[in-house]
Image (cartoon, rainbow, N blue to C red):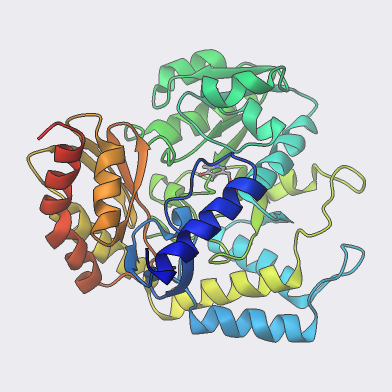
Length: 398
Ligand SMILES: *Cc1c(COP(=O)(O)O)cnc(C)c1O
């Protein structure tokens, strides 16, 4: 056993003794990153095609992000929400500009908190009933969990906030049948991320908009995973032409600095009033400055265009006999394998220097940094047949 291997083993052992076992054993101990690459404690390099789960929009250690965070921390690192700061206000304005709507923003520290804010906002309509989709994921706090259908996540924590109806995702008729004049909101992901990058049929969001408008219910789109350029546009719902009432974002927003936002359109921005909601850290100037730097870099480097181009190349390069459907938009990509071997394929990828995600037994998800180049994507697609071969062999499915 060499010295470096023992570093990994030691950190793993300390982890097991000191951190709650909520995530299982960590796959690696990582020590540094640059661009789309990370290095482990044994100095092995990996191409990070998961990007911290759709978070590291600019990759690792991007100079624009490092500079913005350093400068803000050196100037004013935190104030309470008794006070305003320029980055906080600038970010709220920028989010509304990107969404193309008037409205108001509540800044949080995570996706689940953005959804909590939205959930509380829907209660201020005077109604309580919410319709959510099967297969959807909205976070782990009690409110967001109440809107998440997966039994394994929910059941250990019931009773959760009630009055939630789940409908099959993508079925506009089922949605229409579930929404009544008592419904406060319908919450949907424009593309279901955790489920494995699952798209609804064309026209679904438009039908959801019609249904909610007919009943005076809010249409709330959870873009925590799909938003902020991930799909090659600022918001995944943009292509539908639909104007939602509430949009939540988080993951990629500040490129790895914790943040989230609940954006309410038009008069819905006034539903939460003084005393209704709060946060100590949300809107923190360092996180807001980081988000502004990420957004500006995406704009100046045309990373939306890059996400579309490199995403298309990746999807083409992933075609293979053992691969079924390949879905994606920009750099959010999901694919189905022809057997439940996604965990083994993910391990094989890791052994060959690539970080990917098995989001279901037979599904792989990629959400690489938006700065990923064609050449870097090509390194992965060149290795892909070998990764599949090794993974299937290790799973006894060769
Ligand atoms: C990740 C995710 C969340 C939860 O975000 P956290 O920052 O982990 O709390 C909520 N909704 C969607 C669609 C997500 O992908």
